Length: 362
Image (cartoon, rainbow, N blue to C red; front, side, top):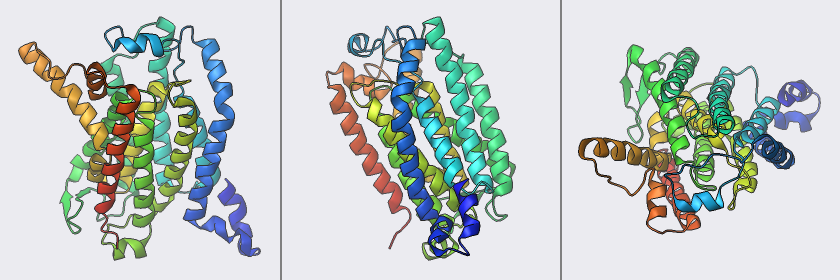
């Protein structure tokens, strides 16, 4: 909105030229979303406490400490992230850009699904919410629609191909299977972040790290000169997603202010499903789906721990981990929550740097 209001003035007044630059609008979007989150955060938390009798239901089979330290904490704090992210993106992004609308609608669609899940949990006072089948079907529908949309937004040589990191010229042709792969990337990323969100601040910082990496990737692949210099596959128009990713960072920082231990609010599925879906959609739009698996390696490991636990328990009746996802395993081993969270943050930072190394910056 601000871009469209000020861009026409740039020709007459040179100070307004800055709105034409993605870098300026990305920085402004980050600050704007942070301010929105910090301003509305206290009001939203008070409203959630008033509406949710007893806060988020706590799993009875979970770590015993959660029944004492987390009971009564309101959930659905992801609404704050979505409010700040959406408001800032609409203010600073070029709304003529199809990539922006596609990624934003995927984020809001998954957020709406998470909202329904959280609402059922807090109103029925149990931890089940939306059934697993209904959740997967809805995620698949949103992901497939977005994948087809992105397919038609892509330049012709890249539309149905999978790019590989490190091997700059490698493009794997997928044909009509590409939308299915893109759908799975968005679904997988959404559920992976959801599984990781189990401790105060655990998921939100790795999300910010991944968003920071993809803000840079979007900026580079959206700029033909930089993309050619770094031997990246240029995707015209995707640079505008740097504004979206920066807004996501600011919104996440604002949420972390209230989610830092001891958390005043949990993001719930409203936030975790939306954030994971956003990262997956950006990865598909920038042709860096494989890099997302590296940068979001922490989310991958958490998901694998659940898959391994369920598979092995069904086959043998025994558990590989004391509890899954993996962060609960370390809680059962006696690690302090802050220790787990900070060490997982460190791992996420390392994986973010590994992801950046695939760009061969020089």
